[in-house]
Length: 634
Image 1 (cartoon, rainbow, N blue to C red):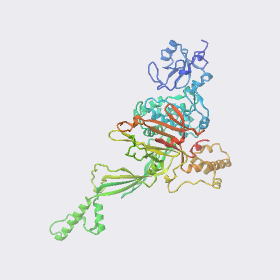
Image 2: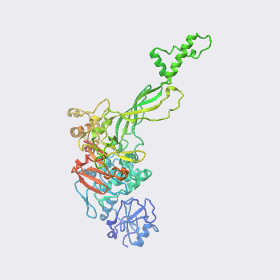
Image 3: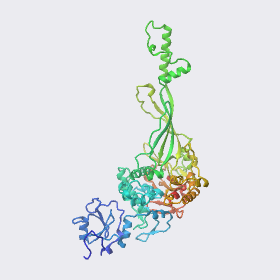
Image 4: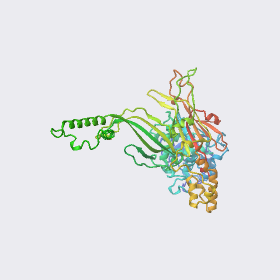
């Protein structure tokens, strides 16, 4: 052969015409050798038959396959390098005929390409001539994985999360973090991401890639990473709740990209005999997950406890009614009943007082205690009103409709909701009567939203489990798709809401104040490469007039909607079946350039009308603050 067998220099290969692209599938469930079933960093894909083999040296499966089958062209699945076997030389990485395979194996994006994704109107074409819109592709259902597909489709259209994972693979070195894109909030290099975060990043890059060999994507690698990370809690063939999975996935992605382990929680005050201090930590902004979805809520908990009154409270009570004071019964004379120590009348009086004090101290009372805490949240869980007991003429339930504003009364800052009506718990033995906490009789909470995130997740709790089966609440929650105003549900700190500065105030700011104004609202990209103060002032004026009012108005637009549908016969009389296992999930997302809404259910992608979205059995809603998307764009 004329080609050199040395691997030190990449050369051209005469066997490139033997490559069969139509059978190549890089979405395989596991990059393992098809002969030994081993998984290793050095797995090669045969570009002639599409099978995977380990190694490329002599006596390895890849080498043996090349000799026996005369298949000579291979690609390293991890590094993306091309090799010719059994001659063992590397093919020129700049070979034009192999660039489409490189883009299909490891899709990559530049910051400029990511910024143009939402404006793209062009359809891509796969190897079979089928057209598809990048980002709006179907995901294969691997047996009861429709909940995962719906959640991934929704998260793939959350702009800051999508941009982060599309660009994460470009920063594979600690020294390169922040150099390719200074606005990318990456903490760890891509090589140090968890396997789950890597699989999620690769899946999103495949979904948004215009260079796919097929118009659908198989989420095999993400499903396997989820199964391992959850200890098979979320596994193939096992249906799950999308709301619980979304909360779990966000936490795992937060940890996988280098985030801290817990949400921030701060106890503000405790209205009782002893006031609690402020403690706890705050983990906001430790990852792109928290930057995007984290808000803050204040919880006021009022607990009623059944407990002993206690000697101190009893003595105070006697003191208030004038029957006894702290000096009436001196400690040294309390038990002195010896003959001659006092007259009989005084002894009887002291004894009656002791009996009265003992009776009051052991009396059972209901004490109320109020505690106020602040905590972070990634999603808000909303309780749907119970379904009616009456049935229609066909034996089915009358499905009610409820506006979302009524469901949000839980967070109006006024209404209390019961946490538990009665809790039977054992009274803890204590050595001091006043330290007895008693038994909790009832507990109720009031919620006040202190801060809303740029992307708000609402979880409509539809499923309830009792001792026998799972029930689903079919109530339809109606919500607006555009301009959903949440300002009446937000109770900011005493400083109040931030006001939009006037043009005169902006012109009077210093350079440092102008930069802080832009960085505070996520527009650090406007600060970069600005030399003259006049240019910075003009950028601030444009931002204040165009985007800042929407950011401060707490108005939201719908980004994604996940619904759960069950067959018609489920829930009818005589047909008691599990609605969670019988049902399926769908996801609605909007194309930004055209405004067209799409309904995606596994491999099916079709257009839909926004009027149908607002009256569906929504389960998860993701809203975007108006102006937040423009704050991410340049």
